[in-house]
Length: 458
Image 1 (cartoon, rainbow, N blue to C red):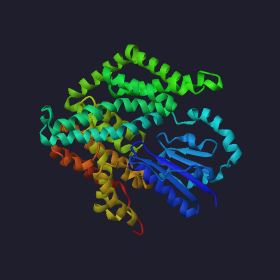
Image 2: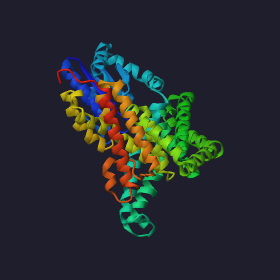
Image 3: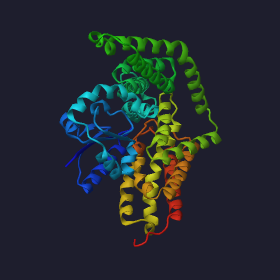
Image 4: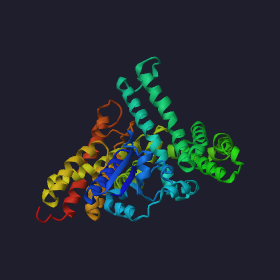
């Protein structure tokens, strides 16, 4: 029996990672294929592939939207897709992997150097690099945001009293975790592009962006600048073999860090800071009409692909604004991300004849995922009936996002779903915020109940 190995990873490492792995495992069992899947999620690497697993594998499936240390598989036949593809067509991916010509052990060793040089060009480009940075940044954002929110339990201004527990929590969450957000974002964007040589210039560029006041936009710019510069230096600088070891630890970090830093200080930083300040000022003084329109847009984006690139773009935008003390978009984004699974669950209750038994059972799980702010809980429904489900959940999420902005709700914590509502002062306008989520849920359920046709042999 030929063995297939796979790696699944999504930017947040919460839902897509594990749902994709389960989908591949089920398809492999149905086809009687030996499969081992490594997941690289929010809790770390699980079921890690060993050197022996890689050596024995006929082919590799990489269903990932972030960096997964692809260099391990140099010389092996590789099927590379986005993580969502493993949910949509796991059987097709397995067939594609089996159809590939396996490399011999000799070929495997011979192709390593060539594969390393080709690896950068084979990646998916800027989106993957950005999502690698976002994935690395998110634990800091979540931990920092929740610690800040917990500090508010003692009073919204309690952290101003030095030596108190509230002050300590604020120092940890805001002074440390949030201070590392932009440098980590930039560093891991650069790491995704150029691997280790890009990390130092990316981190330094991100730190400078933070110090200058260029915010997350400056961090993104610094990450791409540092990464592509380090990669270009790695490819361009040629040294005698006995001096090659100096490139990754001395020459590239020195040149890339120096050049990136100087460009951030003298060329890029101030224009980006001006842009970021303008965006922040506009968001802080936004009128109700513009607030509603922004909420509509962010809400619709959150539901459009349920954890895909558009969803992550909206989430990244809101998360980046937390460092600038702009909290309204974060509230709108989380509320709108909770609405799709909740709306689908409600639809299975009020219109059970329009859903199969499996879908009605899935609705219960979707409800749990929804209150936990895991939008991916809507994916099974959308995959089965995209032309009715996706417009319905986009409408409900758009309404929720608009209402959240209209009500003036703000959110300090970037994750946690309904559970953060219990933290005093973490969310403003709590009652109206919950109402926005409820209204969007009902809108989704009603539209879907109208659009869906009754299931035959229900």
